[in-house]
View 1 (spheres, rainbow, N blue to C red):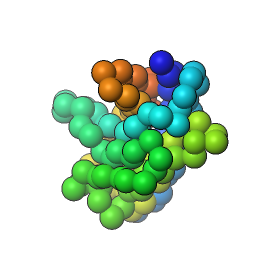
View 2: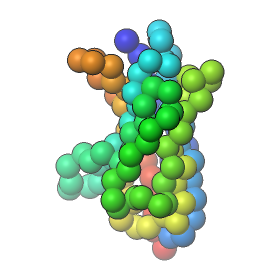
View 3: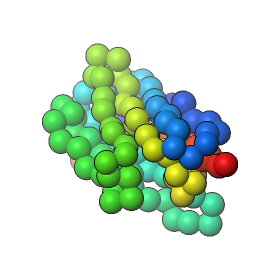
Length: 116
């Protein structure tokens, strides 16, 4: 079981960058696969990026590929989402997710707003 707290969201102009952090507490962070999801107003929650427990493999939604980077620091029990070249369509609540086999845990979300 793991508890997750996201931070780093905010209001930025198009083209700006943000780095989201997800701090984990509990046992055995290093064995969990991690992901970022987002939910925009009026839309379903969508998968943004995933990273394996070791950080060796990452995957991205087509809409963010080349702009976003997911990473993790297992020594700090933290996963990050570096977001560059932000667009208005990136506006959403971003959620951190941890999973291991049948277990899945979610953070509370952090708001990202991209607006001119």
